Image (cartoon, rainbow, N blue to C red; front, side, top):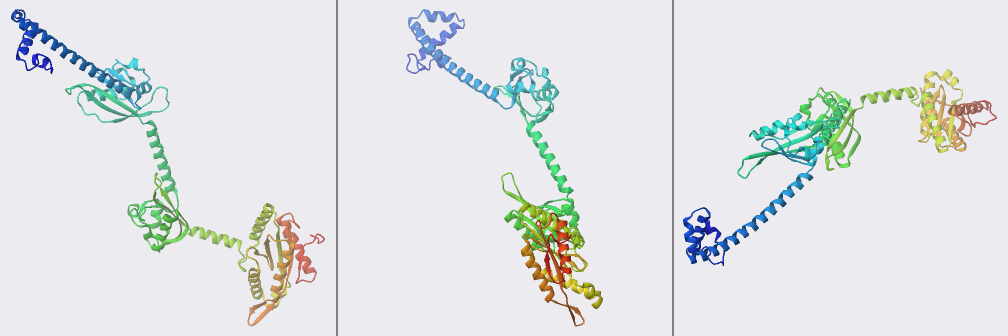
Length: 497
């Protein structure tokens, strides 16, 4: 020890002076109670001088040691203050216990979670904290202090003053001394309630979306960027006859009669983002074919990257049947013109449009002159030929926006949208002339000529309702027949209705 204390460079009697080292050794012996050293110290003047020098050196060594110790203490205090700041400001709940499970640290988040202030918690046993007991954390920490391994754990607890459970991720770490001895433990509790409920909401949303997908009567398929099926619903399984496990990973185009056209469909979806009403024919494994309309749109990742395409293949067989039924219900079977029912639907639509946009709509009521005579002379088959021929002629001569209908028997109507009375009269006269000039081939080398009479009415100038317009046009038609037939007359208020 004397040699260690004498290693002060530049001082007399440093570590290289064996005499000084010897004197310091005598001093330490004397200080330790060795009375024999007394004579050595006080009977020899040179020794006494050496003692004084040694004491000076020892004082300087002790002063330097004290300064280093103060600096170390300052650094330690700063480190502890920094650690305390981190613990207090941590977004997690942090507590520490000693070997006896007595609380030694308790931050602000622990106060909020457990409802116990720091000053009440420090020094208490962990068993006295309801949160720790009820969640089983006390037992876990005790097991950890006994040397058993502890993994992180999720715990649920209803905090004071709350109506539903909160969720926490609990993680423990041992506190060890310099020699590795167990001194206690620190526990971190991270509030994951929002994340947990968000995960629950996401899971519920996924289940809801899946329910919607499975509830669809149309085959739904998701396709990856390389055209492979990633997921399907039960309707897709039924539509193809292929089990889900075999559909997933296969190429969607395999299940259509025209694979190249199917591939072009989903390539178009990747290019433009959507495909609408793309006609394809789906093939069932049994060989049954189903006409479908292929609709597709891309879907994206959270980063906005295209992840794939959602495809809906709508079976249009039923729709086609419904359209055919609707067509049959609105078409005249003989002439294939719109029938009486469809006529009133169209006329109401046009009068509604007239009210919105303040534009007139005119109506022609047309009747074949002396049609009964044609039937009586040439037979009803010839009459049917003339009805069909006149229908074709009227459609040819009408404008694209006009609606030609068979009103009943030998009567026809023509709806003229956005047409005033003067223009309607011109159109009616053109139709009359075309009918008069046309020769209708009734077979057996025979041709028949006919004439027509036409009544004209305009809404809203001459009628205030669709029914009123029909009545006005019919009145004008009757007047045309009374005036000698084969002519066009517009409705006048002087005509009796």
